[in-house]
Length: 215
Image (tube, rainbow, N blue to C red; front, side, top):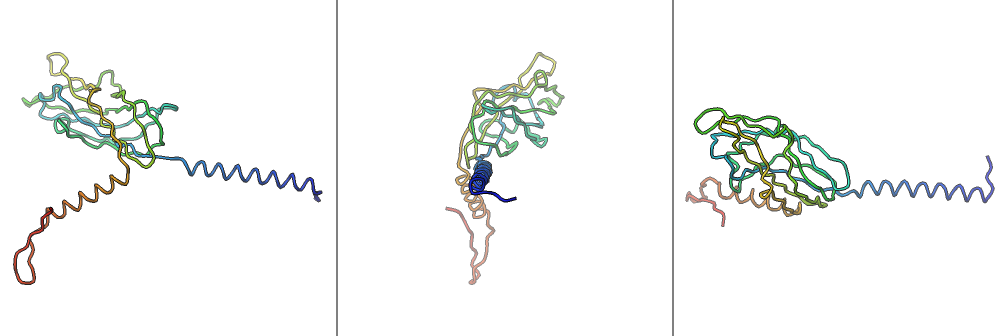
């Protein structure tokens, strides 16, 4: 097929436009920004002093983007003992990569519980309505940063038959932000410090005992 000059120019322009659109689309995908959501759990004073152990298994984490549908990711059947998570203590449930943006809330789904009271008897520990524990705290996912969402919940006594329910403690939920570079540097420094402080006593060439300590 032979094209005259006008048809050739139009055809070339169409190909260029299509190529530009394709490249722009690829660049759009490549430029999508993500950050890390680190979900942790903790326990604040409720009736936790009644327990010898209070094991809770977490199966799923759900988050709600402000401009999208709920996203879910597997928590790996992570088991935590709330007795060990009092005060400032917390336990990591899951680190997940998410698109940047504002999120309206976070939910934690409990798949199982196993609780024992301080007197050695078993306790019934339930989630109200068997629904995920919902934490009405908005947060952001920022590019190349880690957002740490610490979900706080506690067992609360219900009646006098050894029954307890898990309830979110809204005022104790915390959200913090940290650049990934800072987090990596702090992890490296911590590992170095630990190595220095736990070094075994050694011997110099002269046979004198030496001990490595961190400043």
